[in-house]
Length: 187
Image 1 (cartoon, rainbow, N blue to C red):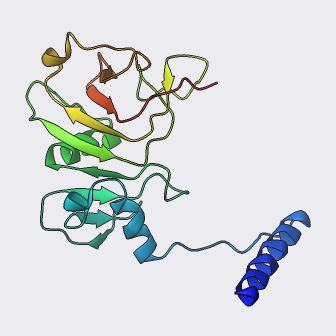
Image 2: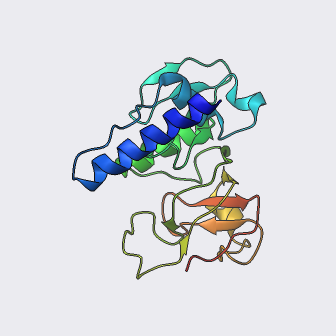
């Protein structure tokens, strides 16, 4: 045990020293097994254990059998926002990534798990990167639901009101967020 602690401290100090003199510290390469574990952490085992697993570049790491797809999150940090999506969300994500039209009234219901939480986004505009505009939210563990926008008309829009709320209203990518813990306003 003492040897492990010494090795760990040695690696830590070497990394600190290397970065302090302007050299690049040794970076940990995330293994295929680690990426799969991260991706699977987005949903309960009864979903993720049989899901197809993709890496952050979209390469299939493991074929699944249940129609769900799990992915590790946004690069370069593989554990920013892992998610597991059903077939309806797979179609939604394809449209979102291509910024192509998506009509919620014509598509089916869908469910996504993000049990590790998500990156900060604007609740009003999916493509806004200016934090001085909009209503910014960073959810902890949550579910996301797709349904026709017309069924969302009586739901709250305020992500801090408590309970489910509508995200990206008035946009092709409108969906319902279901927080699984209290959401705190970012400072």
